[in-house]
Image 1 (cartoon, one colour):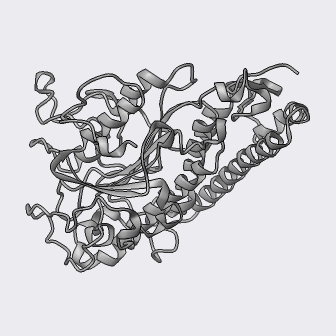
Image 2 (image 1 turned 30 degrees about the vertical axis):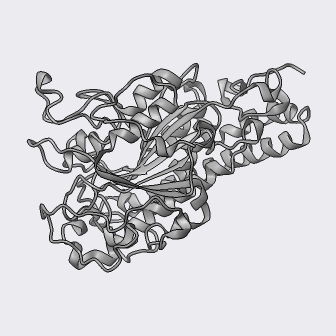
Image 3 (image 1 turned 90 degrees about the vertical axis):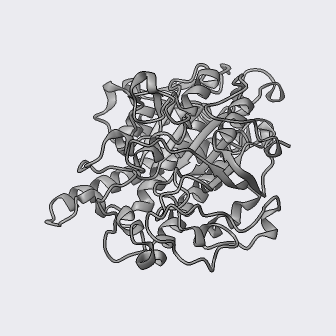
Length: 449
């Protein structure tokens, strides 16, 4: 049979193309001689977390007064395994994958005076530039080229998309600037626009201009695909079938969501129709698209923003509330809404755990998984939504076993440890050379096996 590389495309009717996952039967050369690609993915949540629900040892802490300048500190010193920690309500969804992740606490960022506190949370999360870094450019934000693009310069290779930016904010009624709604930047003032609509994401990844009139793209290549499938080994046939069923399921879920959006548009409601779409389904659908893009080599670098900072438009959170709620507005009154906010935090962690498990189920070369070959980081630009503090950020790192990262642990950093130390460690592991990243003071050697 014709030998194909892992990134070969199945060409079908009308120019449709579906990228193949790694298959031993059609890879060039011996499988043992081909290392799987290394990837980077960021899962960003807005407005921090409720500390008493997230951080072990703080369950009895009272909600802090809103916008207090008090620096809140962790009540544990870390360095232990997950089994030695009480599993908090927000972290509990990680139980099934806790050996695959590391909880990191005590990391800080610096705030540059001159803009709203929320404006720097997301926009500067992956740049971590020191305050007034861009004075020469007259920028109110300590922005620079973000980690994803710095890493992509090194590992993008021949992928069709050097980076992909996913966002689960489909609202168009925004009152805020782009700094509240983007975490990926080519450089100061140059945002990397996010993909927000599942259908448009799907068409960008798997379709071409000539075939956008077709709804079921997989139907167009199924005949070619089945012809190839007959020549695969038993294990690859199973993997091939799983992959095509996953892509087919994504198509069907997109169709269902579009139908729901159309029906909601006909109903007179106070909130925009997008606020009524089930959040969990939307986030997981976008997560599946990101995983498929990483799995098939369409990109090696992706960012994923769950929702924007300081956006007052309400959302429906699946099974949590009986009406749409505004995450930002609740955070301004944590004392009144503390239990509701904890549910939102747990909801976001459930979506992260879903993506971790999904990546861990994707087999790659040499018995490794997509998660083994990916550094996937959960984080927020605020340590606590009520206090607007930039210290003690909630950070969880998953995967990276093939890059030497140890998981299944809790690491607590010394006071004042910059978040940029984590970015420096990840950048180096992915082949980026350099002694510093932004305001880093050194790499986190304890993360590496």
